[in-house]
Length: 54
Image (cartoon, rainbow, N blue to C red; front, side, top):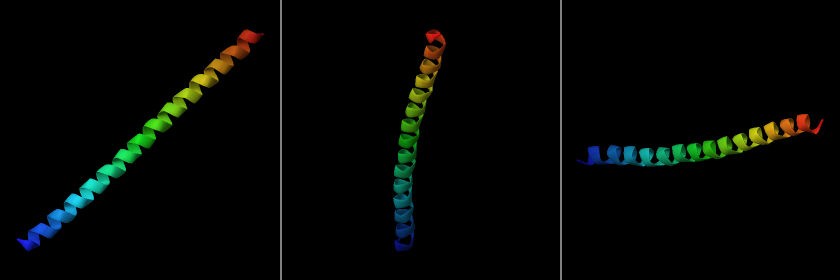
C-alpha cells in the first residue's frame, strides 16, 4: 500500500500546482486581451478624430 500511496500523492500535488499555473496564465491572458482591445479602440478613435478635424 505504501508503494501506491506516495506516487498518487505526488501526482495529486503536481496536478494542483499545474492548475494554479494555468489559472495564472489565463488571468494574465485576459488582462492583456482587455488592455489590447482598449488600445486598439483608442487608436481607432484617434484616427477618426484626425479625419474629422480637417
